[in-house]
View 1: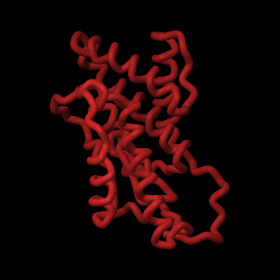
View 2: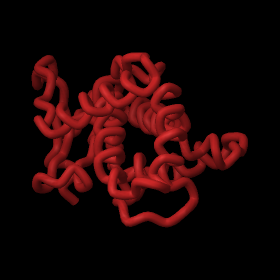
View 3: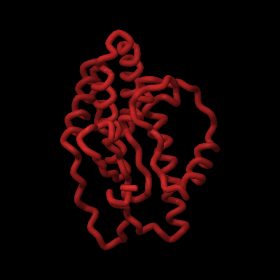
View 4: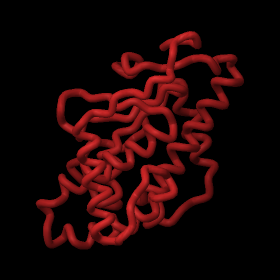
Length: 195
């Protein structure tokens, strides 16, 4: 972890495969819905609509699952990276193992895992976990904050919009705790996420 004084003005490099997959997602949605995604959370309801339609189509074309989860995951991950100051952590070249790791709070997620959850709903799948990556000491804080939310219907939970909201709430809880602890200047690097 780093403290202030280190320049954070240079945007981190995004893996080329993420850029390609996210561009595919934009193209898929544009072709199907006639609307372009713009890498903001405001467009996630469009991605949700596309995912609902894709879920039905995958029953006839299950071979398209990998392409769709990687494309939608890359788009969702890039939205998180851009809006929350995240870095892409690659463990090899498989997008299924990529994580978005924040710099201003210790919080990460596998966006392809999120996409698998969205496409498969409450059914089990062979994709990676979408569980938030938190420091063990932060889990009770975040779990408590999320448990205090009103319940949502299952079909709402399995959306990119809802997963964005969960990520945002977790981020706000962590940042608030950091500020209360006088750690507002702490900055995390990819190496901090190795464990």
